[in-house]
Image (tube, rainbow, N blue to C red; front, side, top):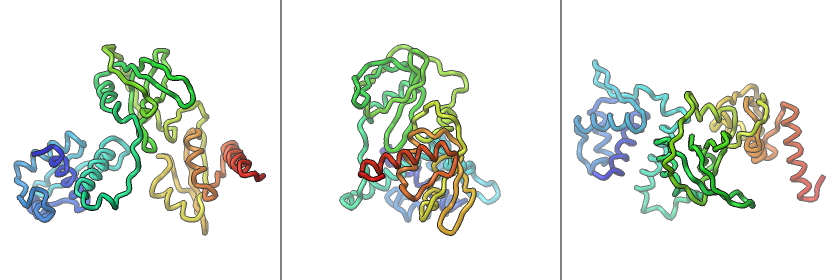
Length: 299
C-alpha cells in the first residue's frame, strides 16, 4: 500500500474517534466501508492494531480498548489540543488528504502561496535531529548577504513562514527566516543542546518570532463589534483571558512582551481594537496610528 494512502487511513481513524467518541471495531468498520477507505474492503483487526501502533508513533495519539465493552477510544485527547507538532501535523495531513480527493474541484479551491525556503526544511530538520551545525547563507532585506555557521535549535511556523531559532558562534540566539536563506549545508561539527532547553518556553512570553528585550507587560485590549468573537476562537496568546464585556465590546488581558510583531497584529484590526493599558503600549499604538494618518496628509 502506498504511504500516502496509509497516512490517509491513519487520519481517518483519529478524526472518526475524535468526532464520534468510543466505538467498537464493528461500528468503526461500518463507517470505514461506507467511506470507501479501502475500496469497500473491511478493516481487519490485525490491520487495525498495526494502525494503532503507527498512529501512536507518528502522532503520539494513544488508542485504547475498554475491556468490558470492547470500545476503542483516544485515551489522551489533550495531545491534539496542545500547540505542538502533533495537532499541526494532524491538521496538515487532514487537509492534504481532503485536497488529494478534490482534484475534480481544484479550480474552485483558492489557496495561499507557499513562501520560498521550503527546500531547506528537510535539511534543517536533519541538522536538528543529529545536533550538527549548519552553514547558512543569509540575505536580509536591503542589506548585504553573509554566511555563518550556527547551531540549529528549533523551527517555528508563523504567518505562513518558517523560521529557524539558532545559536551563533558568539553565543547569541538568533532567528533566521527560511525564505531569506541563500544556502544551507550540513557540517560535520556537532553541538550540544543545553540541558532542559525548551523552544516552547523560549517563545512563551512573545507573540510571533521577534524576541526583543522588551519588558514583560500586562496588556489589556478592548475589542469592538465582531472582533471579540475572532479573539475568542483564535486567541492572540496562550495567556489571553476575557475579563469583561459591554454591549458592543469585550476586554481581554494578555501577559507578554509587546514587540513589534504583537503591535502589528493589533494594528491590523484597525479601529476595532483599543489598548487600554499599560499606558506605554497605548502610546506606541497612538504613535503608529498618527504616523499612518500623516501618510494620508491628516493630523
